[in-house]
Amino acid sequence: MSTAKNPTEKMMTDLELSWLDASEHSAQTRLFIWRIPAGGESLLDGFIALQQHPEGRTLPDLFLGLTTPFETGFGYSEALGREFVEHYEATPDVAEWQAEPYLPCYSPAQLRQLLQGFADRFAEDLRYLVLVLKPSAVSDDSALTRWLNGWLEQGEPAPRLLLIDTVEQPVWQPLLDAHPHEVQLIVDDIDGMKVMHQTAQQQTDPDGDRLLFRRYLADAMLLLEKGTAAQVAARGDLALAIARQRGWADQQAMMHNLIAGGWLKGNDPAQAVAHYRQAQDISGEIAEPTLKGQLRTQSTFGEAGAWFAKKEYLRAAKRYRQAALEAQAIPHPVFEMEGWRMSGFCLWLAGHRPTAMEEYARAVKAAESVPLPERGQTTLPLVFQDLLRIHDKRRTEAIEACAARWQREKRDLIQQTEARLPAQPGIEQVKQAESRLQLQLEAMFTVIREERENLIRRGDESFRRVIRLAREKLHPHWNGLPDIAHPFDAPPGEWQSLPAWGETDVLLSESAGSNPL
Image (cartoon, rainbow, N blue to C red; front, side, top):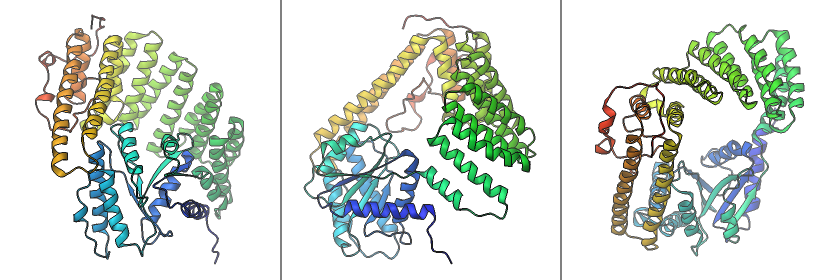
């Protein structure tokens, strides 16, 4: 029986050796940055996930990945400490360790004491304790950087933190530049697409055509990432020949879409359009209705995007409209909504404004098939923002500027609150700081919300009609994009009530003026 490693296993071994090499002489390192190409992020995530399980752990170090969102520095410290203890308590058959004396943690120093206490207790079982930080949300990048600087300023090097960035976006480079002795960079050239390609080349299949098709497909996908449009087309044509011979209509449509993507990336929209249209034609031969609709809609959207790239807005609008109708037939209301929205946008750019408004109205109608709680995650808010901009561009830009001001002032308040706390704050000090910050943020939220409401109130009737319609279709306190959520996700209350002007009928059409702000 063969013991040769598959490409994924080999990559995991390479990452293991890379970590061991980097961490062997890292006594003073307090934070690692692991930098990989964007296409390798899933592989590195997989490697770290393996190290968190007893069956997959191959290193002398204990990794724990945490996606805790970052709001304030003291809140982040407390949440990390709490989550760490929860992970410990949920681990079966683990030796006893008393975490209570270290809790709560409100600063990097207090968190380090908690983690060091754990590391000391299990010193015989692990070399390093490594927290892999990937916050699911960050209120302010500069505040997170301040927290990380606070971690690096401590005298003790253990335990370690690990951050991940990419070659394309080395977001943590300033941290490395500021702390060259405490931060260590690990760079690995791992490529998920290449691993997939290598896996396809090693596969076996009693059906020779199917095996060869998969290999050509893997080649074409790799070339789409790293090669030229002509190379993608050449390899794709080999796969297409097999799919035609075997009558695989769905695979033909998929290959035409892939080749079209290559030509579009290579700045040849005409070639892209030709392949998107071939994909649309061959989709008609697919027996399964849903798959047929999805592939045809995908290729129609692709063609529309190619025309849009050429600034052929009328042609793009026609194809976006067709994509909306195809999505309607599947049915797929989210795709339908986007088709109508983009058709309206293109018609507006082309100067066909009455027809554009009709297309936007169809987008709103399509959204009614989407459950109300899910509509905010679709492109429906963009529909309404487009309409606001159409009716009164300056007023809409002023509404958008409120969101930028909210973020700026929120950042300043958080920074001031953190600066007033001592290095190792106590519970009462944090409670007082949190209470003061909450009052300040809620007051600022109220002021900025009222500023937005005043802008809306002073708009003309057609501008207010768009807002009323958005509040009916999204939620009753919607007041433009970017959305400004309540700072502490307060339950519905007075701040969510409709203003007096928002109680009349809901219409969409009618042109707007640009009355003074």
